[in-house]
Image (tube, rainbow, N blue to C red; front, side):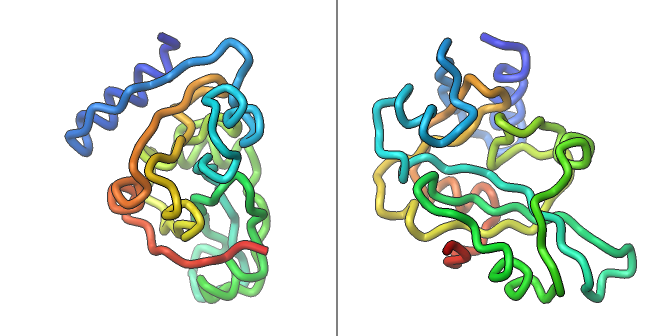
Length: 163
């Protein structure tokens, strides 16, 4: 198993007391479509984690990061994210900043086990599936989990912020 995928599994076990089976694929899983093809599920059952930078809010430090766990079939509405969190603007976070803040690189950012706790929202579309698949720390690894359990472990608020 890739070192980062093993690290993800160990963090999940240590932090949440859950044993998550990590599935790795040679073809890669860095996009929702690629992950769905590899796993053999609907693209909508892929739980994509998107880190967003908010600006123009009451936060004294200026901009801040939040996470959105969205169905791979949906597109995140950045204006809705900004409105939900009381910010003037929302934009996709810079990849370097994502790596520094959450400890994972884009293409493999899991919905759990971040270095820093981020306020998190959860796409209700995912609740329509018995099992969803999230990134497991690398662009070629995913894990399966029940959507309700994922939202609970991620301490996420379920709200539709998609287009």
